Amino acid sequence: MDKTWWKHSVGYQIYPRSFYDSNGDGVGDLKGIITKLDYIKDLGVNLIWIGPFYKSPMDDNGYDVSDFYDVDPLFGTLDDAKNLIAEAHQRGIKIILDLVLNHTSDEHPWFMESRSSLKNPKRDFYIWQDGKKDAHGKLHPPTNWGSFFEGSAWNLDPFTNQYYMKIFSDKMPDLNWASPALREEMFKMASWWLDQGVDGFRVDAIAHLARDLTFTDSTMPLNQYHVAPDWGKFSNRDELYDYLKEFNEKVLSHYDCMSVGEVGGGASVDAGVKYAGYDANIFNMVFNFDTCWQNNIFSNDELKDEDIKINVLNMKLTFDKWIQGMKGKGWMPHYWLNHDHPRVMSQYGDPIHHHKASGSMLGTILLTLPGTPFIYNGEEIGMTNVDYTSIDDFTDIWVKNYAKQAIKHMSKDQILSHLRRTSRNNARTPMQWDDSAYAGFSTHLPHQKMVSNYPLINVKRQLTEEDSILNAYKTLIRLRLQSHYSETLIFGDFELIHPKDPNVFAYMRSDEQMKLMIVCNFSKEVQEFVLPLAYKHVVYSNSKNAHTHKTLHLQPYEALILEAK
Ligand code: GLC
Image 1 (cartoon, rainbow, N blue to C red):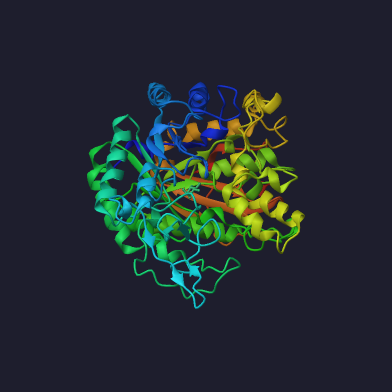
Image 2 (image 1 turned 120 degrees about the vertical axis):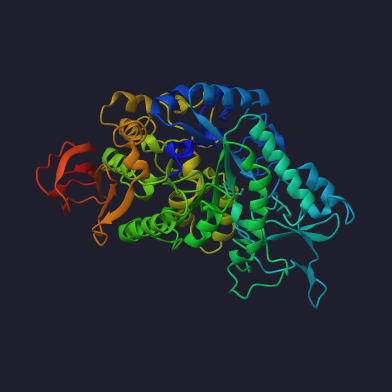
């Protein structure tokens, strides 16, 4: 098997605005990341994915880019970016950037030109359509398609009285990948960053570059915004693969780089193979969202805490479906969360009663799956969702759009508890470095409110506690990358053990050299579990619980890696 560097990597995602603030303005920055590179090195990871730091009006925290070739002053300068790349490389750490190909900011010069007149040469860099007039002469969007950030996928532009397409916020017009000139500009830009020394990309929102160009209405029922949430109109469509192959041929294939595309919620395993199969010539891997949604928090906005249920059975089957479906065909990335999801500690763990055990159990699974694991900053200390008490504490553009509508039919308390469980702000709070003011993240009031548990959950404390989640992550990362077990953990086969057990997530990783049994109690109760094979020794345990036989009595959230005889 081809054993390139990114297969021997553990990734660490940094959300730049919330990682570390070096200049006391309350916002994290690139110099801040440089300051913390030794921490990252000590953690043991060898790959960093950094969220967007390009010039941006920050409508969507940097995913709305107004200049791809420069760094936003909030985060530093281009020289800081170059220093960061060099400093990371000196420590043996590779860096991948978040590459935003689907849209720009409406403040990008291309869009300003494009919107200026119907005949502007950049007009076809974006997607423009006439609106539809009703019997009273009132103008409506060209189609009934909904956007991901609530409301219509179209916005009327006063300059030419046409609508531009935007599947995210109003300030994020979609680029038209059907335009060869636009594609060339995007390829040039991506190559330029590779020439600056970055080692590849996480490619943002990649499933959406091709749309249904017939621009016909969806037949799906309309939602509360009177639009159809019909993502198929602009997701995983056939023409997309041609654009991406061209991207690979003209850009990626010329560098020793890695690429991981974000294909989101709608992609099947077959689509995964089309994007990231070994013969696809597109990406090295793709992130799907399926394993992030294995409880019912998104099912009903008015859910009560006691009604939340984690579906461990389905979670195991979902991991298995992807792993077996990609086996021999393509490489998988794994992650528990990114900046768009709730904190995994709150989502699947138990922050109140079993913080250490559930945090290290989640780490055990992440770091022993086949493929390339990605840790999200703060996960390694078990950071939790927010405990905000006002809807105004939530700053995300998506939340703001949602709250405006939700207030019409829900109480403030209901909205608040829904947001505390689901909102993207949960993962975007300042990193909890220590117990000083602002958690050691900044000397200034941070751009987003802290979670109030930082005096208890922070890096400084966990560095000194032997059994901390942080130390568990360090041990597990070393086991994966630098131990006698590495080869099996990275490349070995994967097979679920007792797939029908509703509480224990267990699997075998095996090759010709050894068989490792990973056994994780994904519940608050003691569970009895019978191993399929006897074991020689315990490679890793997150508890002091001793076992001597094949029948285990697992403590709540106990995690074990056992080498079979
Ligand atoms: C991706 C990003 C998300 C962003 C969106 C639009 O899903 O992960 O944060 O809002 O794309 O760029």
